[in-house]
Structure formats: C-alpha cells, structure tokens
Amino acid sequence: MAAPASALFDLALIGNILFPHHEQVDGTALLTHAYPEALPNDGRSESEIQVMLVDDGKPLAGETVEARITDGGGFLASTTAVTDEAGMASFGYRSGMLPTSAKISFSVAQHELTSELEIPIAPVTYLNLELVSPEDYLLYLDRQSSAANYYRLQMNAFPDQLAADGSSVATLSAKLTHADGTPAPGVPLKAVIQAGEGQLLIEQEATDAQGNYSVDVLSGRQPGVLSVALIEPSTGLSESFNFTLVESTGAHIELFYSNEFSNGLARKGAVIPADGVNELNLVAEVTDLFGLPLSGVEIRVEFIDEENGSIQVIDPVTDASGRVELSYFSGTFTGPVRIRAYVASGLDSAGSLLGN
Image (cartoon, rainbow, N blue to C red):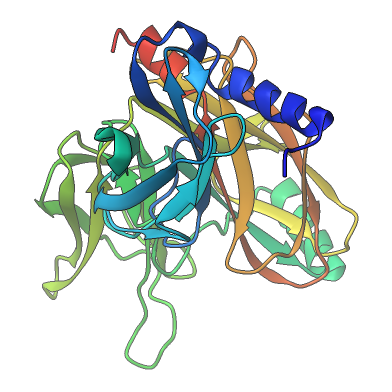
C-alpha cells in the first residue's frame, strides 16, 4: 500500500535535510548520517543512523540494507533495514566502551554496494557539584566570607578518561590520614608521572587542614594509559592512578560554573544548597586544539550516575565565542552531583577550521 502524500513529503524533506546533495550523486550509492555524530564510549549513549540508497540521485525503495560493526565495539539494535519511499533506512547504535572510534559497515547485496560510517569518540567534559543542606550552605557562606579553607577535593580522580588532545584536564585527589583515621594536615606530597604522556599542574605542595590534596592532570597527545603516582617522601608510601587517554577528534570542550566569590568562571569547587530552587549558571566552551573558539557546534548536557535537580539549555549550539550558556537548578538531596557535556554534532565544521 502506498504511503499518503503528506508522509511522502515528510520523508523527502528528511532526506533533503540529512543528505542535501543526494540528487547530484552519479550512479548507485549508499549515503550515511548519524546523530549524534559522535558519542562518549560509555556503553550507554545512543546514536540514530540514517542510510540513504540512491541511483543517479533518485531514492531506491524496498531495498534491504545490512549493517555490521567493524571496529570500536558497541551494539546495533538491528542489523538489517529496508529502505522506505525516500530511500531511507534507519539503524539504532549504542556506543561501546573501547577507547577507539566506532566503525560501521553498510552493504546492499543486490547492488554490490558497501559504505562505512565512523562515529568518533565525542569530546566530553565533566563538572562536580556538591549539594548540601540549606543550613550547611549558610555555614559555607560564612567560611567563604571569612576566607576560611576551601573544600574542593574528591577521594579519587575525575574524570578517569581524557581525550589525547594535549589540553583535557582531570583532577587527581587524595586524602592522607593517620593510622587511627584522623586527617594528616600539612604533609608534603609529591606527584610524578610514572608512565604515559601528560603534564601535572601542581598548585598544592602539602595536604590541607583536612588531609586533602589534589593535582590537575593535563593529557598528552598519545592515546594509551597515563599513570600518575602520589608519594609521601618521609615513608615512601606511594599510590598510583591510571588514566585512559583516548583518540582525539580535534575539538576540546570544557564546562565551567559562575563563581560568585571570584566574579568569574571556575572549574572546581561548586557548592550550592539542596533546596530544589537554587540556580547555578554554567558555561560550556568548545575550542579547537589551538584554543580558538568553534561556533555552530551542538553540545549535549546530562547527569552522570543519579539525576539530582534539573539542567536547562535554551540553545545547545555554540555562539561566535564558542560558548553555550545553561543553568543547573539544585535538587533536594545532599551529596555530589556529576554533570557532563559532550559535542553531539558539528564536528565536520570544527574539523574544517582546523584544516582537517
């Protein structure tokens, strides 16, 4: 049974949007498009893949397209699909967890056609927030106003996976205690790179009043493992942490919050009350690997682990300064909140700015 005229118009419109130059294709060809066109390799992010089969620019309907993953892992919801009246076939793909781009091969046996689509690992950024009770937040404000110590440190590294772009940053945190569990303040710690490529951005020489210590880790440009050790010199006590450096896509993304105490943007140390109404202004910034802003890039923002509060994004596409402004509205549960942002589309234009 033929599709209604309105439905055919919609299908044709979708084809023209996703493949605007398909009418200029000579011969029989398979055209591919994925959205998002890049995904974090977290084993759960998903992309919708559209495949268009054309012959001298005209869509071919009723043809079976086969799909299979050739690299990068992941999962296809189906491995076959039949083209519709607009020559389109759809496939759902869920990302794998390997630190390599996904490659998916498509074929039409009847026409002896093949095509390959690559879904790169998306540039990803993370932000830690700490939700506290309204009463504790008032105490926090008192500490800030009296220039008391800042409590920004975590018990581990976050994130533990970075793009091998020479500019992505993670924070490695530690808490040094005595044998009885009490904090060990003022103890010097030494951070060293044991293996892999990267740099350490050291601002803290010793543990703070609570026994906390942190160092920022800047990724290198060689994919693989970056191992960083923290050493207590007097005893030789040493602990190490391994970061995974994954293939870079040529773009870099950072997520900041508006810090009312410094009248600027900050990456760490956000504390807000868990009152269900408080708003924290955030900024996602996308640049090329030389630090130049990339406009017209769409980002996606989401919670990691548990959703606590809400995120509002008016326009997810970067402006001329490479930025997207958004807001986080606090939840009602105390504890850490983890947010990440990643580039969902626009990498092709970003690559052209880099000369790729």
